[in-house]
Length: 294
Image (cartoon, rainbow, N blue to C red):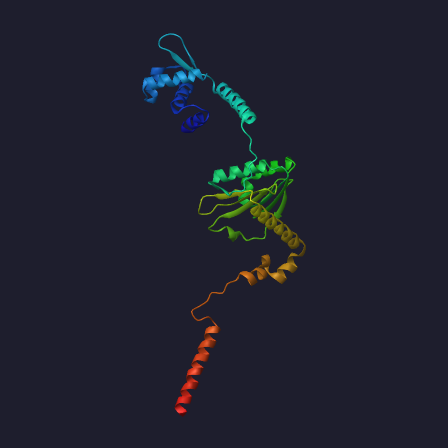
């Protein structure tokens, strides 16, 4: 019942109006007194709500005393509300001031529903190209919109991490990253739409889903270069995988370690400490011998 009330409120009815409609739909024709008794609400408030419902065309009223009320079929209510909404949307689209604002600022999104819905919306607005880097979980969530994008005449390239079956028409590239990368901080995803809008975010970690979107040229260029670097690596691994792994290690680990591996320094680092200690002790023993000779 609560879910029905919530959606009736989303359609523009107040909480009490929604409850009155539900009672009438469930119990049939009722007087205001009977409805107030069922809801445990004052008759004056119920009569006011019923009057508003009658003005909206959602209930029918009888003549005579006492007045009886009957709900209009929900299909009829829905059709009228839909027609009114469509008319309002058309009017607003035609008369609302239009701005082609460049989103060079960094805008943040928080919460799973907001993040996924924004991604779907922006993908639907793509005109020429969409470059996506997604984990299989996100690819599955976005599967339907990923099916629609190529049908819009948009080139869609998706680099996936993990097993993901994408719809036909999608150019898919398999990432070489290990599944362990998603631990703790969540699964990272990026999207670059029409080489203009960049979206970066995480899902599935200990924190709520977070995303950032911007049209800042620096971020756009960064995602573009990063994506096509992955495409190049994908092609190289397809053609020369065994040779590359033998020479450079899995996922080019040997190359990466040369530049990123940091050795932990002990209070007396291995090798250096020993040599210093050796020199120091040798120096002391030599000095001691000289003193003895004197």
